Length: 500
Image 1: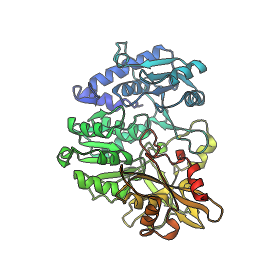
Image 2: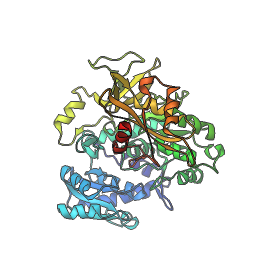
Image 3: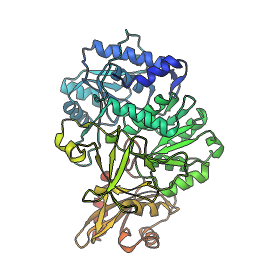
Image 4: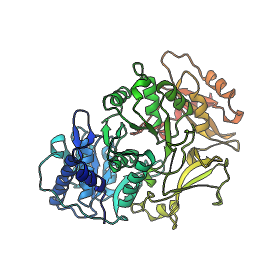
């Protein structure tokens, strides 16, 4: 019998005074984190909740998030973290769908959780710096089975309503073990991130891996490139994790930073979306720091593949399968593809979810009886077995019968010195079926025009891949992790430009 709190408990006993969390102006030792988590679990127990009850948690990346998260785990309940920017109808949907018994919201958030709780008759606790440290009779850690659901994370809902991915105790503990093994995590490590902990990247690949290795975790409640660079210097980070837009933002905000500030940084981990090669190359040239790309999903507890720290990283590739995990690229008939052939990526291993909450049909569509998870991502392996993610199956553009992978076109656009951000999408076309469109953000003062973008692409891509419609925008829409949200791009102006 086990608990997600086990790594914290282990280090609280062995090295109680080692720092577990660093916030903006405070820190928590492993003993303090452990004791506060059990006290929080005691409060949950006294609220009358039972093992397996669902508890909604809405908080930014602050130490108190972790106290509440681990307290929920110690009480034997199921944590349901949600985006701190969720509107009231979105919160109500999760309250209903997950059958929430208790909601917990950070005191600086808006009224969405409180109002949703009132509307649905769900009690809401306010989480503060003081309440996370409140003295309360501690609970005894509830032992769970490794197959028990212990977290439900709702997917983004690009098609239909969001689905709750059920992660088990075994999933999260395995994520921590695999993450620590892949990064060679140890008690001397100082990991830092501006990722939201309510997202699986922050939870599985960063938080659980850090605590499994026994190092410290430095948090930014809200990502800011200058603040992240300050964090690297202040806490002398050895591991840093982020998404591509974060690396890009730090690169462009780094006027007073040089490679000496990164001397102690041994691993920079990128995930959440494909990292443009130009960003990776520029970051390494500027800071003498190689970014290692990994690949995983909410449904795989953030893990699938990762570039080994023992090999030279291949730009554009996410590495090989992580320990205890299998990854295959398959064609339409389910056959494993040869190297260099694009197919759909499948993952099998101890971090693959139990299934979608109350959605057996959706679960059956992506999870086979023998444990293989169908990702919906297109990829290919090279001769060494390293995986390259080409695009989402749903993002594939078919122009006149030819497949256009947006990521390939975006890679070319990022090479232009004036383009800071780029997103390539398909828009309806009566003749070709779909036309290639690009939405770009450029450097301040740039006089780049649409024809310039098209010409740049024409010199580097086949004719059918060239964006024929180009829209300029101040900044592309992004989600909570900084990932560019293509589904949020307004197609109206693009369609109007095409018609003209």
